[in-house]
Length: 135
Image (cartoon, rainbow, N blue to C red; front, side):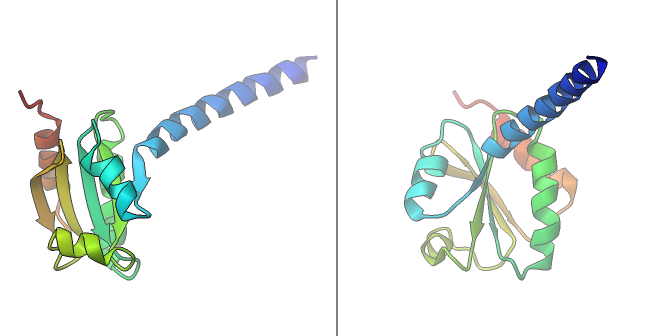
């Protein structure tokens, strides 16, 4: 009986961890099509940071986890990942010339952007700018 109670307590702890992880995963959008980009980024009620990256790009492998970490406590910003190898039309539309390239979109409009590996302060500044309410 004690084992069952301990097991259920462990299960409860495990489930609460799963629940918080699933919340984070819902705010991370891996873009699979132009329609999905339109629906989940351009038409989003939340501001979205769009990370154009490539698997072969070493700076991308550093920047993406850092951005995930910095927005994980901000429930009002989503992070969309766009693989430049799979989405040439989006790359052309947003004039992405190098990776990583990051654009901030609010209400369907680009409000800020940067290219390359930047420090945490620049990412935090982008998040802060994106978090401000527009009247």
